Image 1 (cartoon, one colour):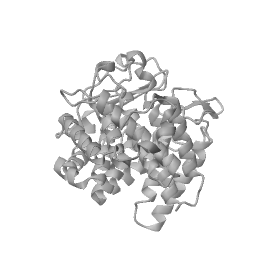
Image 2 (cartoon, one colour; image 1 turned 90 degrees about the vertical axis):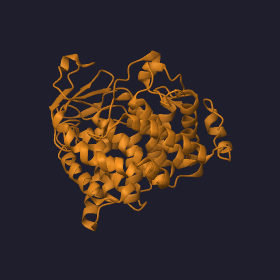
Image 3 (cartoon, rainbow, N blue to C red; image 1 turned 180 degrees about the vertical axis):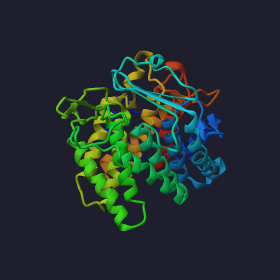
Image 4 (tube, one colour; image 1 turned 120 degrees about the vertical axis):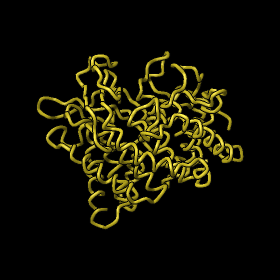
Length: 415
């Protein structure tokens, strides 16, 4: 594909949807990138070295999504075995980890999952009042509802790729704990970020929506499906009126809790993943309702377009923490892949040809830029800044590479 620039993305989208978009090339690139990703995989604990607990859940989701798209290459890559090993081994790894999360002044969550106790004061951004610590945890349950949401979705996607019902059963079990985080006396609803009940943020609530709607489309039994569907309906009704969606149509990081229990938008950074997970949640809810609510997909399209407008430069997605060689921490590098992943789900949800082609062109343009401008040709590793250079912001690591792989998988899906 030829790279688009700025506003020309809309005008040229249709022109690019021809033979130049070669599905074989995108597949080959993705297979190559997944092979490189697996160099970080730790078979002993089922996680990926160099990144965190929740990031590994996202990597599992990425691999499951690729397995759904390309069973033959997934078999050659051994992805079914990877999913099985992560499911078995990761559940035991929490007993050896201390989880610490700090929300800094921009709303960036900085997570640390280490095998020995840590000093919270040593964490970047630890001056924030939003600090939570959890010494060891069991299975996929810990102190952080966002972590639980990521693993719920990861196991749902692993179920989709393998049809192993134990994955779905475990996803329901995690969701049951996630559901306990709902509180109506503060902000009128929604779930807490952590079990310390200090913050209600976008990502935890979007994950709760997406998980409930996804379970509604997969569990056996009409009563169970209705239960999850109704949770998702109620959660979306709360979220869209919570104040987190701002006047520009993008989603800020969370809410300020006032003394009387009311809440308002905290004005924190517009991160790409907060524009992303909600898209997948609305796609799943649209499906769970049999398409009866005609407002859901237009709402998702509006958020997606607003996110692209706010976070793109010359048609390439950027995070604000990338600017000037800034610090995106260990969490921020995963965000953009989450957005592209969910944009791919939305693009295949029966949209108008105008919206579908616009999102498809955007996904392919970002995938092209990653491969051309943000790849270390010696190591095949993919960096943080998708427009390049690959050396920017410290160069590639597990999280930057995995996020870029998410975009490549999205390209395989839509090409």
